[in-house]
Length: 314
Image (cartoon, rainbow, N blue to C red; front, side, top):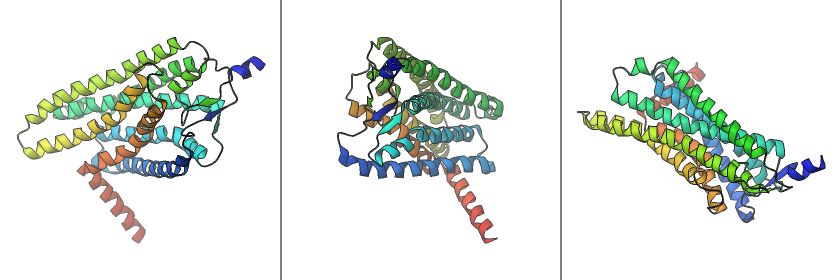
């Protein structure tokens, strides 16, 4: 038991920006504000997509899946971060830390695959519009969404289990805001070459696979859009697809930088900022990116608000 305690501490101390204690209060309020916007925005997308009969297409099925995923993704980390920032206690239990690492990695991988699936949906919608309802039927959409979740889970079980087995030799200070695999690997007191290599190889496959699907899909989409005779049709197709491309850029950019390079090659403060970007900023931005550039969603939101106001008057 003594050896176990020496190898695996009961608690971790999440260092965050402890080198800059003056950042705690402004960062707490910034994080709380972004989390509230994330909850409101993504819940609104889910409600509108489910309640409005005009938004029952595969595109909005995947958008609902993405919003639900983003809600889970941020809730995995942000409440714990707010707790640590709101007081002197910067600890998280060992079990809580490992659970957070498992779930965070699962949801992050799932989002990678889901964004690739959404690009495939856009390809069929733009390039094969007459067959779109037949190809992207409800059964296939559910299968594609389930596959994304299962791939993410399988990868998390592999990577997280390998990381959990690393002895930490009593180390407690985790130089991050929450428990993430690269940070935990750095804490190990043994050679971690196998873990780093496995993480890089699998991350490359899971990031570059969907990203390649996205790039190929949009190359075909671009050709199809330029063939649309009306300027209005081209603009509508461009707006729909550009929203997805913007989300892809916000999510994949930091992920590629963090996971597809050897551990320890980048300043830790930069890694922490980039991680916050894709796990806090991107889920908050997604609903606004899709609603501000999508007339159908804005119209559905107005109809939903009108129904809510009328029901209160009655």
